[in-house]
Structure formats: C-alpha cells, structure tokens
Image (cartoon, rainbow, N blue to C red):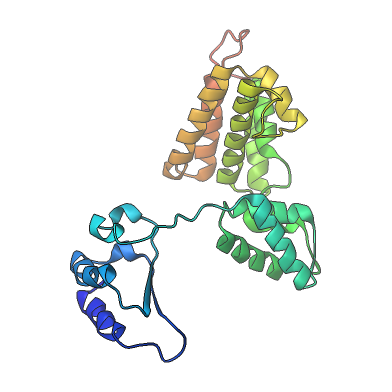
Length: 274
C-alpha cells in the first residue's frame, strides 16, 4: 500500500519483457492502496506501454477512486451454480481415480456457496479425511453437518406447536456435534422454499421442494412463514452474542414457537409440563 512500492513498480514498467509479448501486473485487493499510490498509478493506467497489461482484483470496487474505475474494463465475477461446481469436482475425482458418492459432491458444492476455490479446498480436506471412498456421511462430519435433517424436523415440530420436541432436537444436535448455524441456515432455506411454493405453486422454475416441504406449505400461513424467516435471520445475527451457541439457537426456536401460539393454549405458551 506504500507509494514507494508503487513507484518501484512503475520504474520497471518501461522495460520490455524478455519472454512473451506482454508483462502482466496483477494487483490483488487493489482497494487497499493508499490515495497517493492511486495518484502515482493513474498516469500509467491512462497511457500504459503497449507491452504492459494491468489486472486489478478487488472484492470491494466501490472503494476504488472514480478516476481509476473509468480507466478500467470491468469484469464482475459471478457465483458458480452448484451444478457446475459438482460437475467439475466429478471430473477431478475421475481423473484422480477416486471413488465417491454423488451426494457427497452435492454437499460440497452447496457448502462452497458459488466459489470454485472454496469447493476445491473442501474437496482436499474431504479426500484427506476419507479412507477408500468419498462418502456423504464423512463430508457431513467434516462440515459439522448432522446425519438427520434436523432443520426439517424442527419445522415439523414447530408446525405441531411441540416446544418440548424442539428442545429435544436441539440436544440431539449437540450430541451429534452438529453445527447450529448450519441447521438454522437450512431452516431459512426451507422457509424460502415454502414461501416460493406458497406464491407460485407447482408452476415455478425456481425450486423443486420435497414432499415434506409441500406438506409444511399447508400448515404454515404466508404470514407465519415471513415471521419465522425474520426471526431466523435475527437469531442468526445474534447467535454469537448469546452465552453459548446452543442457548442462542434455543432462544431462536422458542421465539418462533412463542409467536405462533396454538389456538387451544390457555396457559402461557412456555408453561408446558416438565
């Protein structure tokens, strides 16, 4: 970020490459440069030598000066779809002659959240931890996922207004060494699917929910779904502020339960028998 480093770089730009046609300068996280560094670089960016190409990489283009942005051809890298990441992981494992379960790659592709780099990093970890075959169960353990679909079980318990069941499920997540944030993220994903299905029904190109989700569509009103989603988002933000992640997760679940009181409840909703 020092202006001296930028000037040293500019001093070397005038020399032609010894091999090839171009000298390529890649500046990563360019938004971290100081204003003086940008000023020193500006003239060269405006009229670079014919043998020089600059690649400026950043995750925060809004922080770049307008004078720099106006002199650049911008390419916005998009997140890759999970299906494409899955296909690439399959090619790699086939080239390496490693056995795998398709479901294991599905989990890795979803966990990568559109980043091929993250997918490859997770794949390396998964290969190291597996023995002879890449199994979905091993990948779940690696990522802190649970073997059961606790997100679905919790939503089903919520639909039935079974607060004790929700707390028991929370204890089971702890026993399995599960990741509370992952379970909450999955609940939010299911609530999103429910909302889409409530709005568009079967005639939608966005999702293909499983039968259990379609059943929940019948049990939750559109208002309930929106409220639960907002409670889940807020709980996700506040989970790390709680004394423990388990407490933060439990309070989020009970908040969802409290704001959907059963019609037959005559006592305070949390006063269920021990």
